[in-house]
Image (cartoon, rainbow, N blue to C red; front, side, top):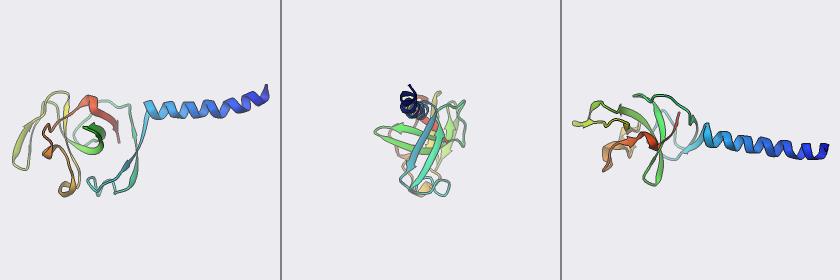
Length: 125
């Protein structure tokens, strides 16, 4: 009986950790300089998948097309913002995002559909 328990404890802990990282925590990797100086290239990031209302200034991890990206929220749903002389009205339930390193960031300014839907957000840093 004791031998079974010794075997089961690591298995239960392993499954618990897997569940936590699929539902509560997020660990990722920053492969580019788009968020420098805030997040350095090749940094490991740690975030949460459980969050409340997202606001301007929050850094999020999200799905965009086939990529997982990390950017800062510049505008939230219902807001009108001006970026580089262009006016945007952010739809409800969406975000306009940009990298902190504006000269080296592929972000909302360049996408055909510049807004990230709330459902695309994976985690908050």
